[in-house]
Image 1 (cartoon, rainbow, N blue to C red):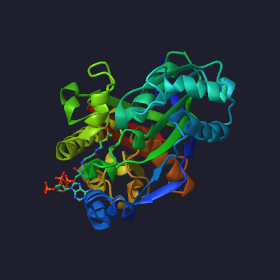
Image 2 (image 1 turned 90 degrees about the vertical axis):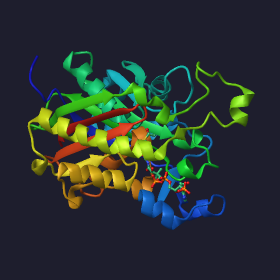
Image 3 (image 1 turned 30 degrees about the vertical axis):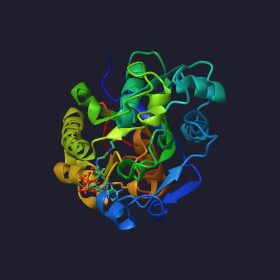
Length: 330
Ligand code: ACO
């Protein structure tokens, strides 16, 4: 097998739902305040998808942009991966719905369930499919409609989450020396109960009781999740840098999962990366789980923060727990 890079990120796309929900909008119905939310999370506003929108329909628009930027046609996709915790349906995969919408008839389509780390798990899968000759071009989508699994009466979670989709085309080989230099993914299944949806799966199938008791919504032990996020994001930074054979001083842009500004600050501090090299979108999008990193990358590109040749460090953690990272020469 040849050495890395096996693959590069050839094109990005994003879909932002049009409805903007500001912190103030929660004040009327929850015991919270704009000041509390900004100080404890860094979030100012987030996007909410419309009732008729799903992860696959939102992904369709993001995918069109990513394919155009990559300069390939939809029939060139050998695989299509959707990272999501909010699939259109429990069965089949959201990737299959997206495949039908865009007409990617040559692709194998499947979902990745790794919560907020899903995009990094997805690009790791894409790189593997490319390295083993299964595909030359892989679409990796990180997409969420988190408002559908968030209890809008629970102030500790309602304020955190938003909807949106980011999509990336991963293509074979390096481009002008640019490509994926390292990836790292890991999990700890002993921590599932810190962030989960109790009901609706086979452990507690759909019932009237579940709706009455609101156990079909996400439950989170915020303080515990926070603690583990800080620890795992630090490990993930170190590991991606070590595997790529680069130092933190060489990193031009850190793009962390956008869950909470305090977790982002702590991750940057651990890695020794100064604030001006850290991308922050949590203020405008909130936590969009698997969509957070590709949405942040698309934002960085559109605002001129991300330029060809830059060394970029991606790092995420999420429910499971799962965590992961990557170093990319952009
Ligand atoms: N407004 C006002 N007060 C609030 C709110 C709110 N929206 N939410 C909670 N509080 C209160 C609590 O009830 C508590 O009150 P008490 O002291 O009277 O009991 C107090 O604020 C402090 O609560 P904590 O949970 O300790 O607050 P903390 O500073 O830890 O902030 C937060 C909470 C923002 C949730 C934080 O813990 C956090 O960000 N955790 C990580 C969450 C995260 O990243 N989750 C996503 C994981 S990614 C995925 O896979 C989906």
